[in-house]
Image (cartoon, rainbow, N blue to C red; front, top):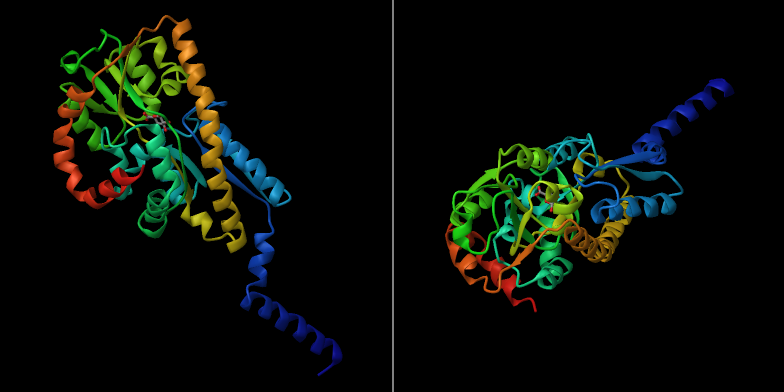
Length: 334
Ligand code: GTR
C-alpha cells in the first residue's frame, strides 16, 4: 500500500473512532443552541424575568453557546400548548402552573388541593425541601411526561374575582360561572363552592370575562392586574383558596441531546431561578395591590375561611386519599 493510501485509511479510521467514542457528538454539542421558553405572562412579570435571567447566566457560563429566547405574553398560546410544545421539542422551556401540569403528572395534583398549605411560607418550605425535589423527580423520571422538572416558583395565593357583585360569603358564589384552569379538580372545587367551574385556557380568560362568557375567575393579584382582568372584573375577594406554585419544565427530547455538564448547569440555574423569582414576586405583589387601589378595586377580606374550607370538603373526599402519604408529609413541614 502506498503511503498516501495508508494516510487516507488512517483518517477514515480516526473518523470512525471519533464517532464510536462520541467525539463527533461533542463537536455537535459545541454548536450554538438557543433554548426557546414560553410564558403566558407579559415582560416584567416575575416568572418571565427569572427565566430570562437564568438564560443570561447560562449564556455567560457557556460563552454564548447556550442561551434562552423568551416568548412571553402567550405568543405561543396558553399553558396546555406550552406543555405540548415542550413535549415534542418545539420549545425547550415551559413555565406553567402546577394546576395546568397536574393532568399530565398526577403526582403534582396534591398541590392543587384547596387550602392544602397553611400560607405561602408553608408552600415555599415544601417546594424548597425534599417534597419539592421528589415531585420534580416524578416529572423527570416518568417517561410518559417527556419532560424534565427544573424548578418550582412562587405564585402567591389565588382569590376569586367577578363582574357581578362582591363576594363576602360562600352563598354569594351561587350560580356564578367562574373560569378555572384546565384541571377537573378545580371544576369540582368551584362546583363544591356553589358556582359553576368553567375550565378554560389562560389565553381566553380576559375576553371571556369581557364578553360575559364567564362571570368571574380566580387568580393571584399580579395575574389579575398585569393580565388586565381587573379592568373588567371589579369585585375581588381574598379567598386564598389555592396556593399553587408554578413549575418550569424542560423538553426531554432536547435534554437528552445535552452533555451531562450542560444538564447539571441548567439544573443548578433552575434552582437559583426558584429563589430569584421569589424576590421578584414579593415586589410584584406589592405593585399589584397598589394598582388595584389606584383603580378603585375594593378588596373583600374573609375573616373566617372556615365556611369556604368546609364547602370544598367533597374535593378532598374525592382526591385526598390518593395523596394521603404526601399530605401527611406536607402537613408536617413547619
Ligand atoms: C397564573 C399562573 C399562570 C396560569 C394562570 C391561570 O397565576 O401564573 O401560569 O396558570 O394563573 O390561571 O391559568
